[in-house]
Length: 401
Image 1 (cartoon, helix red, strand yellow):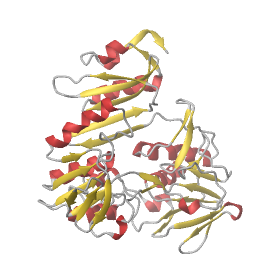
Image 2: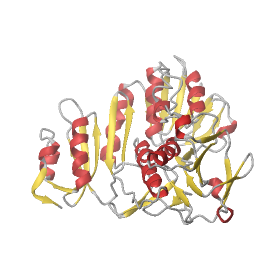
Image 3: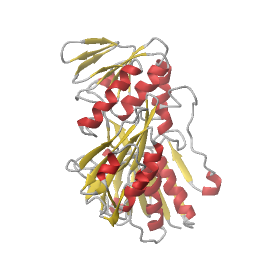
Image 4: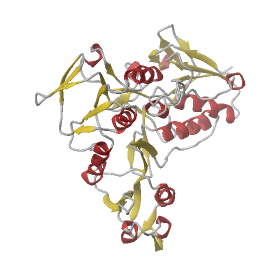
């Protein structure tokens, strides 16, 4: 009987298993996970788990019905496609077809792993350890004002911690957004009682303190490093699979790798997008939900292509940020608002086509604007910029771009 081996027991791995069974696949499925936990949801880690609202975000799954051999606490260490074997820290595993779903791993500061009191946030165990350190009155220093840094700072401040965020760039999320967007996030930190230090680079860490390059010493009961992630694909070294310079697995529009029996999905892949004319690496929950459906369909004999409109969200300082689409450096930014309530949206345009949209606490804009992004509709940019005009009414009368 054929065996499909799925390496990575996160969201993408679990959804691949579920998708295979939904497609009617009756062969063997083995799900390999490096962590000892059954598959769990990651977005609650920086919110509900840190906030003490829950201790567990495990997905509900009927493993008996799925009929999966679940191998947990066992890490992949190598791949030999010619032999159809994955090496693990507990011996090799054979497969007939393989799905790589190992996701991302955090980027840490040099030497940080050897300093007591320094945390990263990627796993359930990480979240539990960090939650124990977020006691009222503790001074927490967060390195990085990106998505995870802002969410950790949000939780820490809400728990009564004295919180400082250190960002090497000139604005929060400066690597993802232009200045006219990133600077709009700055006031949120002060409103929440969080100190935000911009253009501040970390020189070194020591137990109980963060030293900045300008000589400033920040006392810290806990340090959280949130400076990004990279594909968790080191175990593929020497496998012969094509990787990009950052280590992401290169796949085609069917999520097949350079080896015909191997697919890859989720955070660890770069896929070609005909919609955007570029290769994309999407590190968000929505990608880990939808990509596996394409993989499962193709493993079951289909011919499905994957070309999604990316989507993600983040909760920061009492505001929900949502983003849909994909923008490039040459796309035109048009800001919408803010309105009297301080809420705003913004869009990126290629000509008159809305290619991406960000909304801050404006779910109706997201719902209506998402349709414009998905359909490639031609938009009246003057109407788009008017916060009083519903996005369902901004499409140009002459149709699509």
